[in-house]
Length: 104
Image (cartoon, rainbow, N blue to C red; front, side, top):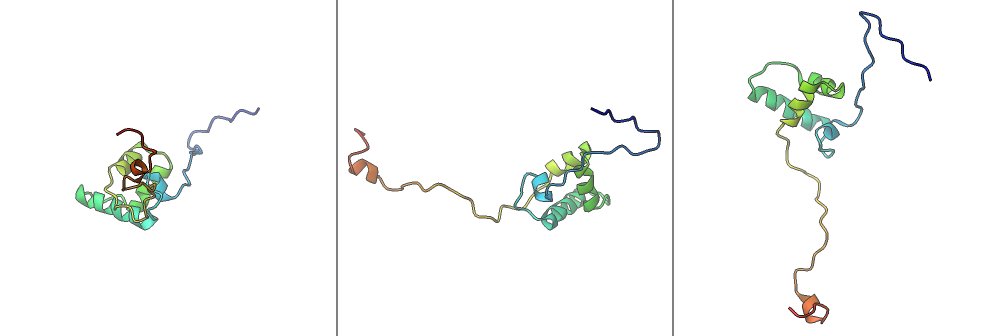
């Protein structure tokens, strides 16, 4: 097994780059990149900040920067647009009238 040589001063160290979709970075895979960029821009405006650009925040989060990741956790995201999967549940008490419900 070869060990990595220490980086020379002045040279960049390879960092982990998260390649997941932007929606997955914020825990909402249903959101597009445009949705997340808009949420970042809204949060920056709400905080009265003029920078950084929303795309820079995403790139910093992909590199694992703690401040960027913390910022993404504070975003107000739009409600889900996709249909929620719910199990079918009986709304009538047919199971009681069929004799399978026991003594209730």
